[in-house]
Amino acid sequence: MSDTNIKPTVPPSPAPLQADEPEPVATPPAPRPTPPPAPLARTDQALTGWVGWIAFAAIMAILVGVFHMFQGLVALLSKGYYLVAASGLTIHVDYTGWGWVHIILGAVLILAGIGLITGRMWARVLGVGLAALSALVNVAFLAASPVWSTIMVAFDVLVIWALTVHGREMKALDDEGYSTSLD
Image: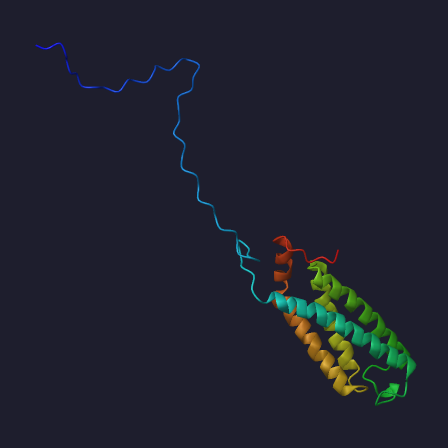
């Protein structure tokens, strides 16, 4: 035969592992990046456009508070402005008393409105209670200023509705990291 022997080539076997070397591990493929969450989304409930109603309720609470303060100042400073004498009101209190009730209620409504803008739960509870109280005060003041008191009652009903139906969504903004505070 000839001097040349052709043998099939076999790849060399890997070197045996030493005792202190770990066994090589296959690396898994890199995970695909996940898309960022949708803006204003929660895991348990997605936010809706109703958050705007809470902002509306907060602004309306502030406005109703300002209106109450103006109404109180008019009652204090211009007693002849209203349609009936103090004895013709639903609750027999002089206009000075009514003026202070309106001024105090207005100031507290303004504070509650600011609390609503910041998404505070206490402001929601206080806002509903104050709007209900405001509606009752305006019904009692109806004889003195019928058109304006009716408008105020309608505003109060809108504030109560927005806070009770969609109040939780304003807090969700803060939970998601969207700052609703004024600082």
